[in-house]
Image 1: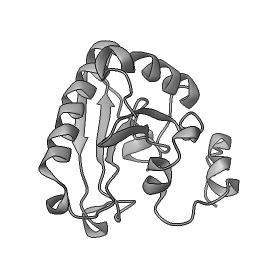
Image 2: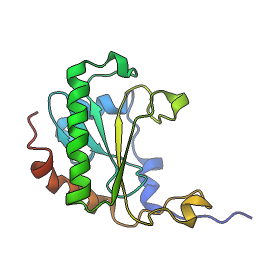
Image 3: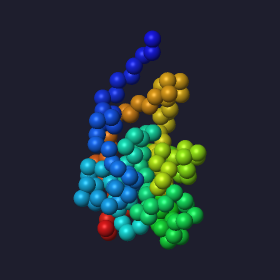
Image 4: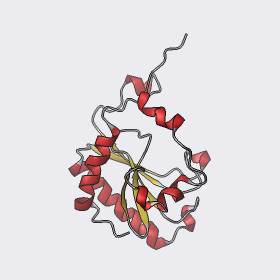
Length: 168
């Protein structure tokens, strides 16, 4: 008999209303729902949103408004802007959030591991000393050590200092 790990905070994943079409395009075009969708920042090129199912507390993504599954189709100006936000995001995670390191990554295409392959996005994953343990390595489960909403509010409060104000 298998053991069951109960995770009531993931109930929303099963019971929440589903978004039709591209979830990132939905977030891009629904700025009035930023708090509900855990958007941290948005400007004319991109938006920054918390990963709803993070690897570690504070995991967020930088996503262009332009819908494409091809990095090579992205305008250079947007790519450079995303890169600049990544630099600022790393500084935010290290200095403001206390991360000991940061993983940055993009999985381009389903074969490369993208969960939402139709719209490119860049992950910034804060890392902490000893944040990988037996439950992750052996049990193939993740333990999220703190409240997601609390982390969202903490990082959202750091955004004006590290990324600047939103410019819609």
